[in-house]
Structures are given as C-alpha cells and as structure tokens.
Amino acid sequence: MILQPVIHHWRDFNRADRLAGTASVTMMVLILVALLAPLLPLDPPDQVAAHPRLSEPSADLVFGSDNLGRNMLSRVLQGARITILLSAIAVLLASVAGVAIGLIAAYSGKALDEIISRFSDIVFSFPAVLMGLLITAIVGPGEFAAICAIILVTLPPIVRVVRAAAMEVTGTDYVTIAWLSGASPARLLLVNVLPNISVPVVTQVAYSISIGMLVESALSFLGLGPQPPAASLGSLLREGSVYITVAPWLVFGPAIFLVIAIWSTNLIGEGLRVFFDPVRARCLEE
Amino acid sequence: MTTIISIRNASVQFRSGPPWAPRIVNALHNVSIDIKPRQIVGLVGESGSGKTTLGRVCLGLQELTSGTIEFSGTPIAKLDRKQLKGQLAAVLQNPRMSLNPSLRVAHSVAEPLKIDRHLSATEARKQVDKMLERVGLASGVGNRFPNELSGGQRQRVSIARALITNPKFILFDEAVSALDVSVQAQILNLLRELQSSAGFAALFISHDLAATRYVCDRVVVLYHGGIMEECGRRMLYREARHPYTRGLQAASGLIDAAGTALKLDDRAGPSSGCALFRRCPVSMPRCETQLPPTRTSGEGSVFCHLVSDAGATSSGDGDPISHDARGAAQTPFRRRSLHMPG
Image 1: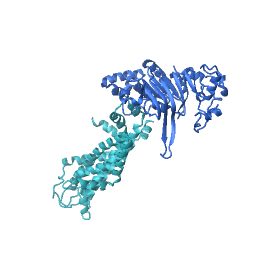
Image 2: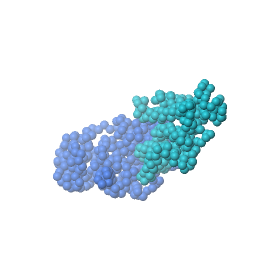
Image 3: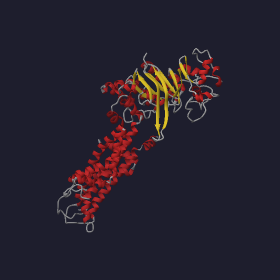
Image 4: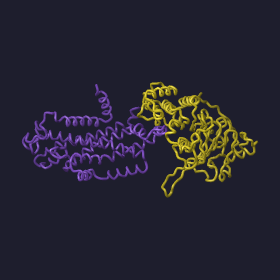
C-alpha cells in the first residue's frame, strides 16, 4: 500500500511527541473536511434563506445559521478552505523565496549578506497587521493583498533561519572539500548545503503556516482579506461579532475552527523540532 | 624535478578584537617548504603551532599575509579554481564532518569525478566501486549513508574520495587522529600502499610522531608558526637536534623525558629572539635577544643557537652533530622500541 511508509513515519513522529502526533491527525482531518466540503451533503455556503435567520445550533445546524439564513457550518468550512489555502500558498512562496535569499546571503557573505540581513530585520520589525494595512493600501483589499501580507510577515524569519543554518553547514569539512574539488556555487548550495539544513527550515515553515492563518484572519477581520460573498474565518468572525449579543454562536464556529487549526499547526511545528532534534536522535541511537 | 608545492617565506596573521585595539596572532611566520612529486612531508607540532593553517595555505584555502605559494611552478593566486580542480584533495580530521550526511557514500566519492570529468552516472559508479574496493571497502558500502559507517570506514571513504581524481597533491590533516589505534594502523598502511601505487605528493599533518615517521619521507617541526627543524625521516628520529623536537619526542615517550621535557609557559616568546625561549629546557641568555640562525646539515636544517654552536665546534662539514656536542642538554638519547604497524 502506498500509505504504508507514511503511516510508518507518522508512528515514529507520534512516538517522539504524542501531542504533535494527535495534532497532525486533527489538522489532516480539518484540511480534508475543508477541501471536500462541496462534496458533503450540506447546504451551499451562499444559499440565502436556507434556514430561519439566526437560528440556534441544533442537530441539523451544528453552528446555527447567520443573519441571511445561511448554514454556518457550510460557511465555516468554506472560510476554512480559503484561510488554509491562502496561508499555504503564501507560505509556500515565502519558503521558496526565503530559502533562496537565505542561501545567497550565507554564501555571498560581507556586503550582500549585510544588506539582506538588515533589510529582513527592517521588514521583521513591522507588526503583521500594519504590514497588511500597508499592502492593502497599495494593491487594494482581497486575496492578493492577504497573500502578499503573509509572505512579507513570514519571509524574514525563514531567511534568518536558512541563513544561520546555511552558514553553519558552509563551514563544515565536506563543503570545504566539495569547494576544493571545484564545485560551482550552485552545486555547493543545492547538493551540499540545502539538504543538510532541511530540518530547521521545515520546522520554521510549519510555524509560518500558523502565523499565515493568523495574519489572514486578522486582515479579514478588518475587512481587508477576501471580499464577500467569499468568506474566510476572519471575515466570518467579523460578521458574527455584529450579532454577538443576540446570536453568539455565529462567532463560535469560526473561532473554534481557527483555534484548533492554529494550535495544531504550532504543535506540529514543535513536534517536528523535537522529532528532528539531533540530541534526541543520539539518545535513540545509544 | 619541479616541486608540486613550493612555499616561500609565508606568513599568515589573524586579526581579532575591535579595530581600535586589534590583537594580531601570527599563525605562520616566515615558513618555507618544498613538496616534491611522490613525496610525503610530515608536519608535526603541538596544538596551535600553525599546522592546520599551513595545510590550508597549501590548498589555497588561506590567503598569505606575505610570501608566495606556487603549485607546480605557478603562483596559486594566479591559478583559476577550474585549472586546479581534480589536482588538489584533502582528508580531514573529523570523519563525522567530512562526508555529506545526506548523500550516499558512492555519490560523495563520485562528486569530484563528476565535477572534474563530466562522466555519466554508470561510468562514474564503475570507477567509484573500483576505488572503494581499493581502499578496502565492500561494494555494498557505496549504497549506504555516512551515519551507517564506522569512523575507520568513513575515513577510508574520505581517502577514496580524495584519490578518485588522481590528484597531484593531497592534504592529510590529522587524518588518523580520531581513530583508534588498530584502525590507525590499517589506515596508515593503506596510505603507504596507495602512495606507492598512485604516486601523489602529500602533506601529512599529525601530532603523532610515530605515525609521521611511518608514513613520511621528510618531516617539518612547527612551533608557534615557525619552523624549528626540518629533516629526513630517519634523521629526525635518530638525530633530532632541536630542543623542541626532542621535547615532543619525550612527550610521546620516544626518548627519555629527563632534561628534554619542555617547560610549561604560556607567555609568548620574546619578540626579537627564539619563539621557544620560555619553554626551552636548555635556553641561553642569547636566545632571548637573537633570532637563531639556520644551520643546514646533511638532509635537514635546524633553527637553534645551541645546535649552530655545536655545529661550529664539530667538524663543520655538515655532518650530524654528535650527542656530546649537544652540551647543555647532556641527556642520554636512548631510543625506545616502537611498535608500528606493517
């Protein structure tokens, strides 16, 4: 079976950090449900007056219905899909860019390294939401602005992690020997450095995804993310907050989903750190 | 016969500390060495004596503050990396760090070959298997990752990788220090065997005098970045003349320690005199103020006032100095039996 090695690795991962093992399964279920929502027997998320307005949660309507009578569960799943997808796309782009920039900074040294490092420090020093506001002011609200904001917020830490790890690896004997045998910079970085910095990078990327979801939700909460009728978890929270005194369940659904998703991602990040920890690996060896 | 590596008056300084109060460390001071084809030159000295720096200089990894270094008659600074590829190789101390942990052994060994000759994967693999067999590794080892190998196996892999492009010069920087004694012996034997068949020149850095004697044709003794003594292998062990060399021999149990042991003194040597002055068991007032002259005799040279005095009183025709002429040292020079491999 194709899944056999995946299950095998998951077992090791689960043994290293049970909380992270559980979180990874939870996250998997959340993603699957969010992605497969259109196939589930639920009302379409934008079907107005499918139910009475602001009806309380019940067996039929797990998260109740909103002010236009739409099924909140369908809307939350649709929102989650957008939040997770935007965050994943943005972090993917940020990772590719971050790895490239970090490697170049570590390899070039001196002036270019200094420029890249100081620039990423400057970008890092702005609060995430402020950065989002700046970008929406330039490109206008919407998915594109959200993605740009997430990239700008998650990029500097990835660059830093890659640069630090790459500098450490660049000083090792095997890189020196590869350089001595005439390897080109591209070969040095791609064959000798990149595979050996994957652990801190993967861990940082996992953290970045949770930061991405948080940033996306914050922007959407301010109305700067995806525009109606599209909804993300953040915009659902904002809509719900209007009715919080009469229909508090409107915020419960998206809030619960968001908390579980971010918490799980953080736990997975922590689990990956533990899983790849060389000290732990040595303990297992001995 | 042209020399492979020729270093003339090489000095390397490292600067540290803030710009307004820089601390300058003289890692190498006025060092000259020639390494001829098919010759293994040993480099001994205690930690911090500049051995590794000199090794890095030979590979062009360390720039000189002053002096020149030539590779096959051309200044190394004028040579392009591309012209040098496949000609220089190194086997370094730590077998854990010298192989890329994410590459299979065969891939690691093939890397210099692929860079140098642009061979196809199957062609390269054939040569790699041959080379692994030559260093005494089973063919299956090529498919393993470095963390699945023992220290000795990894060092063999490093040697295979160094030899695969048939380089002119190989640096062995403490190549056997991290291994246990029986594995050391195997690797040293292998080294000698490979050297006689492949015919590379090498710089063998070690603090193990016995290993150096076993492998090298000539030995250079380094202290505080300066050469103390340079001579043929046999002469070094029978007729070591510099107090520092004898101190090293005493420390490793090759000769009696009485009267030869070096003093413990961390302070730097006098600026105008002999670097060894404070630690030398037989230092004289002159050593503090005057730089020792070079005394060349037979196949070696030595930098010491005492030896040059003794040389003046002896026949003066360049013969090795007799034991009695060592004067102030006055120590019996008994050789202990050495248990060397091979």
